Image 1 (cartoon, rainbow, N blue to C red):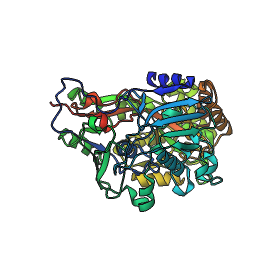
Image 2 (image 1 turned 60 degrees about the vertical axis):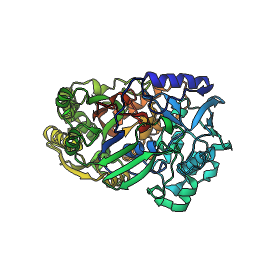
Image 3 (image 1 turned 135 degrees about the vertical axis):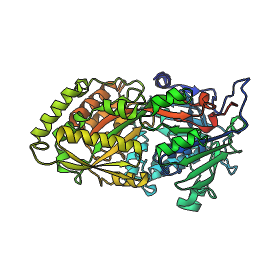
Image 4 (image 1 turned 90 degrees about the horizontal axis):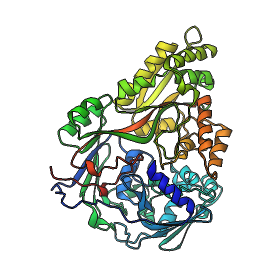
Length: 542
């Protein structure tokens, strides 16, 4: 996308970046603000955590971006803008990054935010003692010694990050990543207060204990019900923050959430599957759809605990080919989603979706090939029975898609599929421990570059839950980090995935929301990563 191309081009020059602080709500002259400056939105499930080094899901990261602030932020189009860092510089051929921190950044208890806070937090992320599900991100960021620290072979203090003074952070990399600065917008890289973490342990994120450095502070948390954050008077740019209070309500039912939105209880909620066309007609200024940097897929358990049938690539291809994505996108979802035949979405910056062979077939051709492949493998109609369980996290939308997939596989291939659902945190644990056969997967990019998607399917990835392993894929992705132009590597990886079919790509996301029209002008629809910040929002009077 244009926004990331600009970032990448400048980064390759290796000069200093000084960006105007386009942070916080910029209310145009003449705008009449509403008296009620609150923002209430819905989450499907309880978030995984609000500890920056532990959080692993989208809903939790949304909260973390309000409570904490990292080195850099994004504007409404995904461009990098200052956060705690006022400027940054790439040198030594993009192997060294130096961030200059603002001196007015404070924790919510009034203590200054310093470079040492970032050193501590990044070491904490990589430290095996933390058991962070996102520790691998330090390795993906190519920090010196990250791989060995995560493996327990080196001490966290040896991580390639240092603070020569309180307001200078120096990062040393093992690969010259031109997009490294963009990776610091990810929640896992945000600072955590060392004194508070060490005093309260895992309880440090409770409202009565937490200390944070973002535009908001945590004031209430009722697990599986709601979380409330309110303006932080010690935030360095609090004077330009408009929204006073943000509340997220956990509502497990899509339809119940829509009902509460229409009753005026919510300012934002996801549109239930299939209802976007109707709602767009009824509420043209509230129903929105736009591309996201996210994919939806099913992952095969290829570990020793997985079904024997899935070890046969012909079975995997048959299941992938026979799934009619147009039915999912056009008849089930109806929100502008894109059929997926590659893992990486077209919305990814500087990425051209390759024409993989199976994606160019008609659905009739794919169905015919699927029947041929499963027969060759000795399963399905006329062969050995094939039955497996399809696991997804509880959601009406996921259930609808799984039901359609199961019906297609039964009708076309004679396969018996049992559907199973689990609450979000249980689902993550089950999938992460390979206690599944076929499971729903979805990934939203941590930064806008193809590696954020494709690294997921490398052998060491912390979220390679199916345990797919291909040495050529690993090498291509490793070589991509030092390539002047990695596009050929990414194309080749997608081609290998099309041959190995370790996952079944289903669709690429759109953001499909009902959004209170009083705030729609502030929502970052131009940012495919959807890194939004409540401090950038405001409500206008109706």
